[in-house]
Length: 409
Image 1 (cartoon, rainbow, N blue to C red):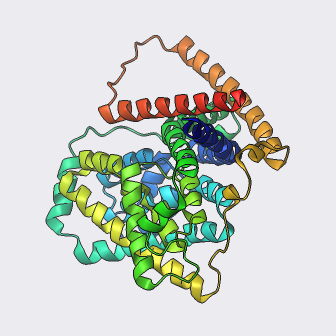
Image 2: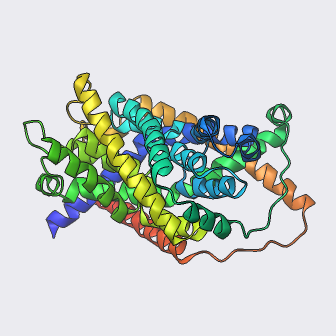
Image 3: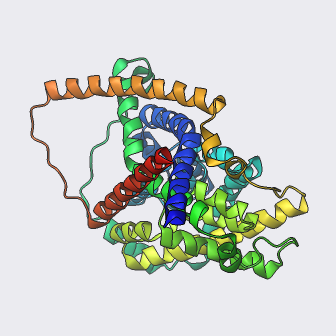
């Protein structure tokens, strides 16, 4: 019993330490993302998108890069693009870019892993898009795309006005919208982050290294893994992601633990790329496009991410750029993550900025309430959202109790 309580306290401290390391990265990324989404606007993105061709794919990739990293928000925008006539490839390019090429994800990877993984993330994101483009071009049945368009096309078209970005950027209203978007970003990811960081702490404290060598063939061995072992790891990575269903921002600490336990570069990259092959994304994709198209997209993404991870691994190996050694997340003890260093000062700075944005949001909300007297319609939350909220709350309670155990010790 004492061993369990000791591991519990260690797990909670590790989870809290991971979040402490990452807070400033989250805040910086979401501030940049919020500014871009408010001043560029999704309406402008949709208007600029064509139906097909290299230009549309390039625009979709760029707009995904400057968009939100939330898988569910990206899916909603992807559906809207597809509904408005964009081809399937540009629509999927936007989805892949908005979950793999976004700024905040690169910052998070730099904090928990190393520069090689950051480069791999952005190069791999481009490879994912190219592989997806090729596979769709070779395999997409015309009837399947027509059926998906019929499925998604039954919704009422909304009128969209494109605001002047210069006017927004120089107005208080524009920055109030940035503040609102910033907290919306947190609202979309807090459950994934809470659950993901809690799982990472639990794995760090409770799961022995032997588990990873069994699950990921060749992990932890002193010799370089064979091609068959690397291939198996790139397959196991997405399977592990599918069953943990953690979003892209929440699985980075877990990825750092996998790498610290000897999983190959290809296996880690496949795991990070797998945020779009998890069950909640599959379910929502089926609601938008139908189950046949949802499974087709899942299969295309799975093949693309495995191929991209393998190309990255052996490309980096050929250039002698494969990362060596433990991750930054594993180089210090859990308690030492709260030391007085650059992380402390960055967190204090971004806490102050968050406080300012919260004040701007309150000012904006009060003004809206003063001008709008209409009643609000509350949509009924889906069971999966309620389940994720419950899991996140349980995770939070687990961490709080574990931290109290540390105080008792």
